[in-house]
Amino acid sequence: MRLRLICVGQKMPDWVSAGYNDYARRMPPELPLELTEIPMAHRGKNPDISRLMQRESDAILSAAGTRDRVVALEVGGRPWSTEKLASQLENWQQDGRDVAFLVGGPDGLADACRQRADQQWSLSPLTLPHPLVRILLAEQLYRAWTITRNHPYHRA
Image 1 (cartoon, one colour):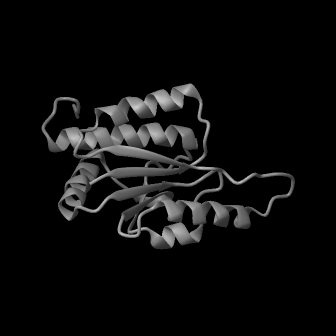
Image 2 (cartoon, rainbow, N blue to C red):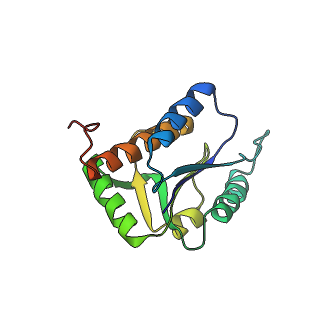
């Protein structure tokens, strides 16, 4: 089983790549964390945002496997505690399918992504910068895994 972050945006600052890679490297071989970057549609003067979001959505959904369990990161999604995420992770591992986490661009995810999602998860009621979401998500997935293994990393 793989955990896959499918994110809109490329060419992140070094601190984003370093933060994400630090946690991705900590994941065990049987539960790799992989990143797929989707090019952000160009937003010029007076862009048609819905069309740009649809283009990004098409690319996101193409990157997600047809059998993947899909989790859309949405500010309006359900909030999960770290312990709830650990429980979800155990359930996903028992299911055996890859899990694709969808992270939209500056305008969010198009309806098609939300409709394809098996679950919608909110990391926070705050609006978070998309580069930071990569690091937060990677850290929380690592933390959830450590909880399932009684590793001392998580100290509630």
